[in-house]
Length: 75
Image (cartoon, rainbow, N blue to C red; front, side, top):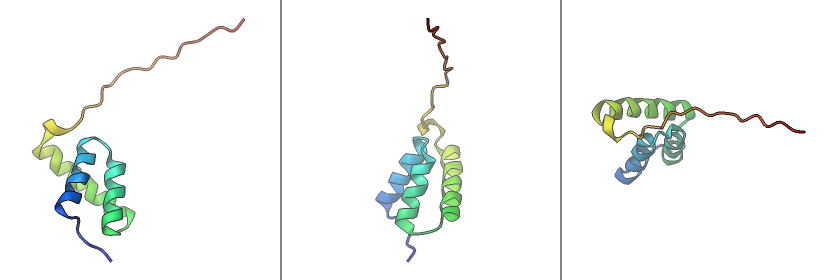
């Protein structure tokens, strides 16, 4: 049986989106609403777009850095 998220549950989904964790937001939405994966992904994509437009400063920016491999010589 499908149901809509409560206000607290919706806030939990929004926090996952703001934190950049769309997988967590999607799985939370699925567990709450009992909907399918495609519907949950569509919901999270739409929510992400809306929140990005209305609250861009709340999104966590991941530091982009370079990872370097160190080559060790083995005697």
